[in-house]
Length: 445
Image (cartoon, rainbow, N blue to C red; front, side, top):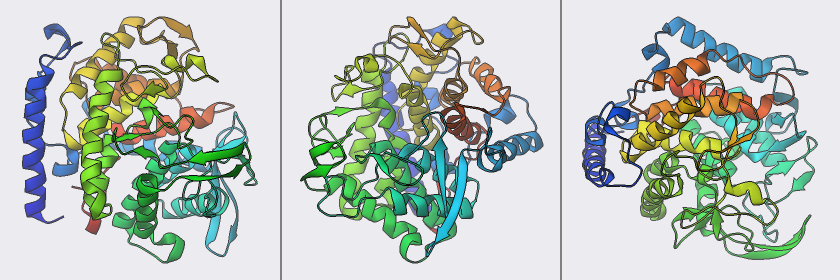
């Protein structure tokens, strides 16, 4: 990225951060003086890592050596991607086609392949410079889960759940998969350069990004009956949908909100849509503040566009803090770490960690009502990982307790190793300073 552009981005980022800091001081749910190590204005004094190129290494700050940090990240990747296929691995290579090797990420517990996991696997691979694994996952995803039939309601999207032979379980998309696919492809383009066809990463990302915003309504048969589906982002709300199925399209999911990614798209995506993505990033920042409980900062699994919880007819418990919602803290904290655009994210992480700290670091469970009533579930590696990633935005000294808690966790094995494993792997990259923005010409700033 040209130096002049970097300076311009840095200047605009700092101005916005300072303005938001002033607004945050009067927002509801603001942490007390003793719960805050610095104010939002002080936290905004440094530009984000996407601008400076300096990614926080919280493991080093917690006292671990770089040798040990690198070893932990590499060994975790090796176990999840190339460990014992019966008890450790979630990555499986399954032959090849004309485009090269094929591989999928398996949700072991559900025995299916999900767009979420496939796209997470690609993001992990590009961050660790593992091109073979990246290409093999992408090849399998495009071969078995992408809808290229222009008459299908999910045309231009990926089936969110399929069997390991590619047979669709649910042909409709879950938009977080598309969001991660798009961003991982842009990063691959910048890091490795573009190839041809399937591996022309930037062209593939541009096509996907155009479709998620501009795909027209299509009605047609699916394996769940006749459906009508539209685009993945509501143009008026400037917000990601829970689903493009028109029956439920006017809803969202807090954990699908990825303002850090939208800022990337506003820089490298199709030029005609860049203003939309800048606006969408700010809308998502506002959404987190609205959706998060004023004391606990817990968000619901599903929500209305106004930030209130949504009890889906098939899943009324979606008003609670459950498995999807674990990721909200990672999303706002990654945004703060990369772009430093909204100091309210510091307060969100402080409040969230204060809540879980109050529950007991060794005792908190996985499922809660938004006001903090425990619903069971035991303590899981996935939530431990997400709460640790909240430390990217938190500024209270307790944040390093959460970082150390993640460090002490072994790599998940067994039946539930998929979701816990991918979340833990991404958290290790985030907190080890190795989850980076890759922009054109390989410039991580």
